[in-house]
Length: 235
Image (cartoon, rainbow, N blue to C red; front, side, top):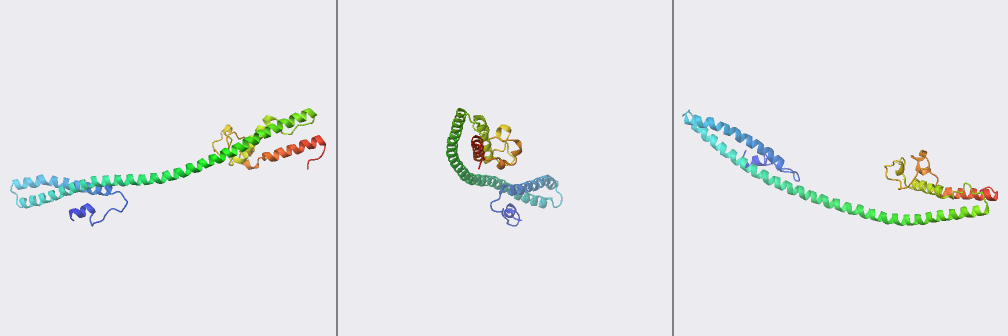
């Protein structure tokens, strides 16, 4: 096996494209260094045999010196190749990371752009919801005062402030929470329910869609109240 063949992996095989080259070369370097160490251990005995004039010692020493020179050259070549491979692998890794970061940056920009659009839609929706909430409270308060001035029985009309706030919070939970999510003030960690939302009772934790819609509750309360005042059965 030639020096170049040993460097390439025996039969001229090359590392697969895209894979790190340094680990495979490091293994060959370890083998070459072990081979060199073995030859160096033999050198002393061969030199001693030559000095003592043993038969065939000169030829053995000459052959061993050739092997040592070849082994040292092999180690030097593989050492240099390993250093170069480490640098090349590091450059390839940095290039791969840069390409990955570019892809991730594009994905990040897309996520943030979509997030920003969601924030715009949310701001518009909250603005409309706030206006509707203010009108809900204002009209309920005026209805209560009107009923009180006229002496009407207004019980169950859902016009008092605190019960209305509770109904609004339940509506927020109904339209936003996923099954099983609790409101934040009840230790909810799911994150799907709107902040400030509430459950009418624990039984709705796993079926928020079954919470009565706010509009339906208001219409039923209005119909019942008018029926109570007029003495007519609600339609």
